[in-house]
Image (tube, rainbow, N blue to C red; front, side, top):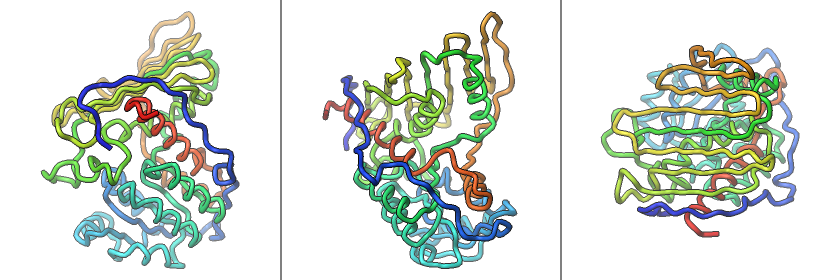
Length: 366
């Protein structure tokens, strides 16, 4: 995959999931672990260290979790995370976690190309799964994961889904209560500088910019979060997508550093999703704007404010609620308490399909 150096814009209908057993919604059964037992967890891979290291630290601090093992192809990286978490067991072999009967769940934060095989093996071993985002390079690989998870009856939590964070709950409350009316349009945007392959590294973005290891660059890196939230809040299937991808700030980068998608939903609402790596070093902003028939809500990380306009009123401003990563809490609730997760392996598959449809539109390959 090579991103064009100049923008291209095309339109294509989105590709629906094929009507096969592998993509039909399934029921995921909770683990047989006692309701009062600690969730025994192993983490495989720290390629996606931005997510993997905070997840490991949160696991080490959670009294409902026992962090049993850390695995990475680079033993120094595993030892580094062990030093941050106090986890005594490290390895370079994923099988040491997947095949361990004393481990209940696996969190996979490898590069995208490695994740499907590990998730399939983990599901077949009866492990619950937290997966890196997106869950696969292709829909074919995604469907292998879906089939394995459904067959095993385990929980699969996509790391791109944040539906119980304080911000997510606030947005959902505004939408579900009808205070915004019928949603008509939305904007999600995240702009950052290039990622780095490891904390403090000067070796560049590493796997994030390797088209053999990830299906896209600066756009998909964060669009997965926003597409999940878009589909959850708007509650309408995607009808079509137009798109633009480009290499704007980093000539020669083998993946795009700029992407802008426009999704038209079956409800008639139009939602834009812009994600980039074009900001200067250290630059970052995340923002969203939802417009309904009765009101609006806007938030951004630059001002740390959430603004709400309701019918017949004026804009009100409050501090921006935290948009914390809640995957571990959702996993514990699912396994220990039987609380059904809001997002599953099918959700992750649909998010990947939307992303791939955008790339096909933007590159004129469909």
